[in-house]
Amino acid sequence: MFVENKTTEFKREYVEDIKNTIVAFANYNGGTLYIGVSDDGKVCGVDNADDTMLRVTSAIRDAVCPDITMFVECRNDVMDEKYIVCVTVQRGTARPYYLRKKGIRPEGVYVRQGASTVPATDAAILNMMKETSGDSYETARSPDQNLTFHKAADFFKKRKAEFKKTQMRTLHLIGEDDTYTNLAFLLSEQCTHMVKLAVFEGSQKSVFRDRRELSGSLPEQLEEAFDYIDRYNRTRAEFSGLDRSDMRD
Image 1: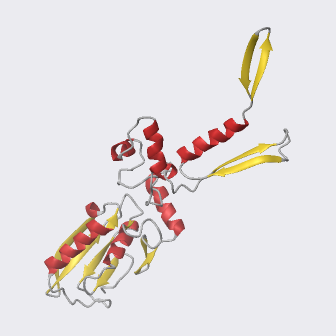
Image 2: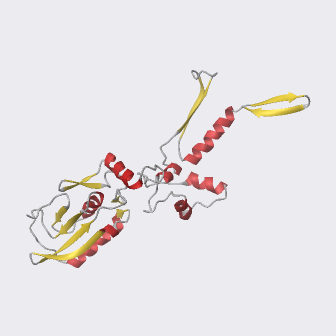
Image 3: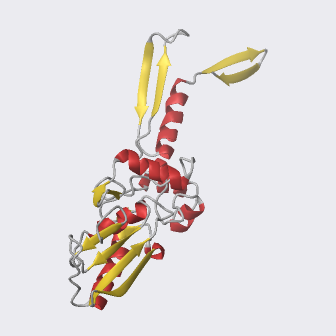
Protein backbone atom coordinates (compact mmCIF):
# COMPACT_ATOMS: atom_id res chain seq x y z
CA MET A 1 0.00 0.00 0.00
CA PHE A 2 1.31 3.45 -0.96
CA VAL A 3 1.29 5.46 2.29
CA GLU A 4 3.15 8.32 3.91
CA ASN A 5 5.85 7.52 6.45
CA LYS A 6 9.18 8.90 7.71
CA THR A 7 10.75 8.70 4.25
CA THR A 8 7.67 9.28 2.06
CA GLU A 9 5.56 12.42 1.70
CA PHE A 10 2.65 13.23 -0.64
CA LYS A 11 1.60 16.64 -1.97
CA ARG A 12 -1.42 17.15 -4.19
CA GLU A 13 0.33 20.13 -5.84
CA TYR A 14 3.25 22.44 -5.32
CA VAL A 15 2.95 24.44 -2.08
CA GLU A 16 5.48 26.58 -0.23
CA ASP A 17 5.95 24.19 2.68
CA ILE A 18 7.49 21.65 0.31
CA LYS A 19 10.79 23.31 1.31
CA ASN A 20 10.19 22.28 4.92
CA THR A 21 9.82 18.63 3.93
CA ILE A 22 12.98 18.68 1.82
CA VAL A 23 14.92 20.20 4.73
CA ALA A 24 13.49 17.54 7.06
CA PHE A 25 14.51 14.69 4.73
CA ALA A 26 18.05 16.08 4.44
CA ASN A 27 18.29 16.39 8.23
CA TYR A 28 16.92 12.87 8.75
CA ASN A 29 17.72 9.78 6.67
CA GLY A 30 16.54 11.09 3.32
CA GLY A 31 13.22 10.43 1.64
CA THR A 32 11.06 10.98 -1.42
CA LEU A 33 8.46 13.66 -1.95
CA TYR A 34 5.74 12.88 -4.51
CA ILE A 35 3.98 15.89 -6.02
CA GLY A 36 0.71 14.99 -7.70
CA VAL A 37 -0.37 12.46 -5.07
CA SER A 38 -3.01 13.24 -2.44
CA ASP A 39 -2.62 12.44 1.26
CA ASP A 40 -4.56 9.21 0.92
CA GLY A 41 -2.15 7.94 -1.76
CA LYS A 42 -4.46 8.61 -4.72
CA VAL A 43 -2.57 9.72 -7.83
CA CYS A 44 -3.99 13.01 -9.12
CA GLY A 45 -1.13 14.08 -11.36
CA VAL A 46 0.18 17.59 -12.03
CA ASP A 47 -0.91 19.94 -14.81
CA ASN A 48 2.59 20.93 -15.86
CA ALA A 49 5.37 18.64 -14.63
CA ASP A 50 8.19 20.73 -16.12
CA ASP A 51 6.93 23.92 -14.48
CA THR A 52 6.52 22.12 -11.14
CA MET A 53 10.08 20.78 -11.36
CA LEU A 54 11.39 24.28 -12.07
CA ARG A 55 9.58 25.71 -9.05
CA VAL A 56 10.93 22.96 -6.80
CA THR A 57 14.54 23.29 -7.92
CA SER A 58 14.40 27.10 -7.68
CA ALA A 59 12.98 26.91 -4.16
CA ILE A 60 15.68 24.47 -3.07
CA ARG A 61 18.45 26.62 -4.52
CA ASP A 62 17.17 29.93 -3.16
CA ALA A 63 15.63 29.02 0.20
CA VAL A 64 17.69 26.21 1.76
CA CYS A 65 21.08 26.57 3.47
CA PRO A 66 23.72 25.19 3.25
CA ASP A 67 23.64 24.24 -0.45
CA ILE A 68 21.66 21.02 -0.68
CA THR A 69 21.33 20.68 -4.46
CA MET A 70 23.90 17.88 -4.70
CA PHE A 71 21.75 15.71 -2.44
CA VAL A 72 18.49 16.25 -4.33
CA GLU A 73 17.21 14.63 -7.52
CA CYS A 74 14.05 16.04 -9.11
CA ARG A 75 12.46 14.12 -11.97
CA ASN A 76 9.23 13.55 -13.91
CA ASP A 77 7.54 10.21 -13.54
CA VAL A 78 4.36 8.49 -14.65
CA MET A 79 2.08 6.78 -12.15
CA ASP A 80 -1.37 5.41 -12.97
CA GLU A 81 -0.93 6.99 -16.42
CA LYS A 82 -0.56 10.46 -14.89
CA TYR A 83 2.45 12.72 -14.68
CA ILE A 84 3.87 13.35 -11.22
CA VAL A 85 7.09 14.90 -9.91
CA CYS A 86 9.38 12.89 -7.63
CA VAL A 87 11.87 14.70 -5.42
CA THR A 88 14.39 12.30 -3.90
CA VAL A 89 16.49 13.71 -1.05
CA GLN A 90 19.54 12.07 0.48
CA ARG A 91 20.72 12.61 4.04
CA GLY A 92 23.01 15.66 3.89
CA THR A 93 26.55 15.89 5.22
CA ALA A 94 26.32 19.50 6.45
CA ARG A 95 23.36 19.20 8.81
CA PRO A 96 21.44 21.01 10.13
CA TYR A 97 19.90 22.30 6.91
CA TYR A 98 17.58 25.25 7.40
CA LEU A 99 15.47 27.87 5.65
CA ARG A 100 17.60 30.88 4.77
CA LYS A 101 15.04 33.44 5.96
CA LYS A 102 14.54 31.70 9.33
CA GLY A 103 18.10 30.78 10.26
CA ILE A 104 19.40 27.92 12.42
CA ARG A 105 16.50 28.07 14.83
CA PRO A 106 13.57 25.70 15.45
CA GLU A 107 11.37 27.74 13.10
CA GLY A 108 13.94 27.26 10.32
CA VAL A 109 15.18 23.70 10.93
CA TYR A 110 12.84 20.76 10.28
CA VAL A 111 12.99 17.02 10.96
CA ARG A 112 10.72 14.05 10.34
CA GLN A 113 8.51 12.75 13.13
CA GLY A 114 6.59 9.76 11.88
CA ALA A 115 4.88 10.87 8.66
CA SER A 116 5.00 14.54 9.65
CA THR A 117 7.49 17.37 9.17
CA VAL A 118 8.03 19.27 12.42
CA PRO A 119 10.38 21.99 13.72
CA ALA A 120 13.53 20.61 15.34
CA THR A 121 14.19 21.22 19.02
CA ASP A 122 17.19 23.26 20.16
CA ALA A 123 18.78 20.05 21.48
CA ALA A 124 18.31 18.28 18.13
CA ILE A 125 19.89 21.23 16.29
CA LEU A 126 22.93 21.21 18.57
CA ASN A 127 23.32 17.45 18.17
CA MET A 128 23.28 17.75 14.37
CA MET A 129 25.87 20.52 14.52
CA LYS A 130 28.12 18.41 16.74
CA GLU A 131 27.76 15.35 14.50
CA THR A 132 28.75 17.22 11.35
CA SER A 133 31.31 19.63 12.83
CA GLY A 134 33.08 17.32 15.27
CA ASP A 135 34.08 18.36 18.76
CA SER A 136 35.77 21.62 17.77
CA TYR A 137 33.67 24.50 19.06
CA GLU A 138 35.36 27.12 16.90
CA THR A 139 34.82 25.34 13.57
CA ALA A 140 31.19 24.39 14.24
CA ARG A 141 28.51 26.48 12.57
CA SER A 142 27.24 29.38 14.61
CA PRO A 143 23.54 29.08 15.54
CA ASP A 144 23.30 32.83 14.91
CA GLN A 145 24.06 33.71 11.28
CA ASN A 146 23.06 37.39 11.54
CA LEU A 147 26.47 38.59 12.69
CA THR A 148 28.17 41.99 12.47
CA PHE A 149 31.90 42.67 12.78
CA HIS A 150 32.36 46.43 13.22
CA LYS A 151 34.66 46.15 16.25
CA ALA A 152 36.64 43.28 14.75
CA ALA A 153 37.11 45.26 11.52
CA ASP A 154 38.42 48.23 13.54
CA PHE A 155 40.73 45.89 15.46
CA PHE A 156 42.25 44.60 12.20
CA LYS A 157 42.38 48.06 10.64
CA LYS A 158 44.45 49.44 13.53
CA ARG A 159 46.98 46.72 12.80
CA LYS A 160 46.91 47.45 9.06
CA ALA A 161 45.43 44.00 8.30
CA GLU A 162 42.69 43.21 5.80
CA PHE A 163 39.40 41.87 7.17
CA LYS A 164 37.26 40.90 4.20
CA LYS A 165 35.55 37.71 3.04
CA THR A 166 38.83 36.25 1.76
CA GLN A 167 40.57 36.76 5.10
CA MET A 168 37.51 35.50 6.98
CA ARG A 169 37.65 32.26 5.03
CA THR A 170 41.40 31.91 5.63
CA LEU A 171 40.87 32.45 9.36
CA HIS A 172 37.98 29.92 9.32
CA LEU A 173 35.38 32.48 10.33
CA ILE A 174 33.45 31.28 7.28
CA GLY A 175 33.25 27.52 6.84
CA GLU A 176 33.28 25.38 3.72
CA ASP A 177 29.48 25.48 3.63
CA ASP A 178 29.64 29.30 3.37
CA THR A 179 28.18 29.87 6.85
CA TYR A 180 29.67 31.66 9.85
CA THR A 181 31.47 29.49 12.40
CA ASN A 182 31.49 29.87 16.18
CA LEU A 183 34.86 31.57 15.83
CA ALA A 184 33.11 34.27 13.81
CA PHE A 185 30.44 34.42 16.51
CA LEU A 186 33.14 35.13 19.11
CA LEU A 187 34.47 38.04 17.04
CA SER A 188 31.03 39.51 16.35
CA GLU A 189 28.99 42.08 18.26
CA GLN A 190 26.44 39.32 18.89
CA CYS A 191 28.87 37.30 21.07
CA THR A 192 27.10 36.28 24.28
CA HIS A 193 30.22 35.19 26.17
CA MET A 194 31.61 37.55 28.79
CA VAL A 195 34.82 38.40 30.63
CA LYS A 196 34.43 39.04 34.34
CA LEU A 197 37.05 40.94 36.34
CA ALA A 198 37.33 41.76 40.01
CA VAL A 199 39.73 43.57 42.34
CA PHE A 200 39.78 42.42 45.96
CA GLU A 201 40.86 44.17 49.12
CA GLY A 202 43.85 42.27 50.51
CA SER A 203 44.61 38.64 49.68
CA GLN A 204 41.56 36.88 51.15
CA LYS A 205 39.17 37.55 48.23
CA SER A 206 36.38 38.38 50.64
CA VAL A 207 35.99 42.12 50.07
CA PHE A 208 35.52 43.58 46.58
CA ARG A 209 37.14 46.87 45.70
CA ASP A 210 35.78 46.82 42.17
CA ARG A 211 34.29 44.46 39.62
CA ARG A 212 33.29 44.60 35.97
CA GLU A 213 31.60 42.45 33.34
CA LEU A 214 32.69 42.96 29.74
CA SER A 215 30.52 42.02 26.76
CA GLY A 216 30.61 42.36 22.99
CA SER A 217 33.14 40.96 20.54
CA LEU A 218 36.21 39.29 22.03
CA PRO A 219 38.72 41.81 20.60
CA GLU A 220 36.75 44.58 22.30
CA GLN A 221 36.54 42.61 25.55
CA LEU A 222 40.28 41.93 25.51
CA GLU A 223 41.20 45.58 24.99
CA GLU A 224 38.87 46.67 27.80
CA ALA A 225 40.18 43.90 30.07
CA PHE A 226 43.81 44.98 29.63
CA ASP A 227 42.86 48.62 30.22
CA TYR A 228 41.11 47.58 33.42
CA ILE A 229 44.10 45.52 34.59
CA ASP A 230 46.49 48.36 33.74
CA ARG A 231 44.45 50.73 35.90
CA TYR A 232 45.17 48.60 38.98
CA ASN A 233 48.69 47.57 38.00
CA ARG A 234 50.64 49.99 40.17
CA THR A 235 54.15 51.21 39.44
CA ARG A 236 56.64 51.37 42.28
CA ALA A 237 60.15 52.80 42.30
CA GLU A 238 63.21 51.40 44.00
CA PHE A 239 66.50 53.25 44.35
CA SER A 240 70.00 51.82 44.45
CA GLY A 241 72.30 54.74 45.04
CA LEU A 242 71.57 57.27 42.31
CA ASP A 243 69.84 54.68 40.09
CA ARG A 244 66.06 54.44 40.00
CA SER A 245 64.27 51.26 38.92
CA ASP A 246 60.54 51.35 38.13
CA MET A 247 58.62 48.09 38.47
CA ARG A 248 54.95 47.24 38.02
CA ASP A 249 53.01 44.92 40.26
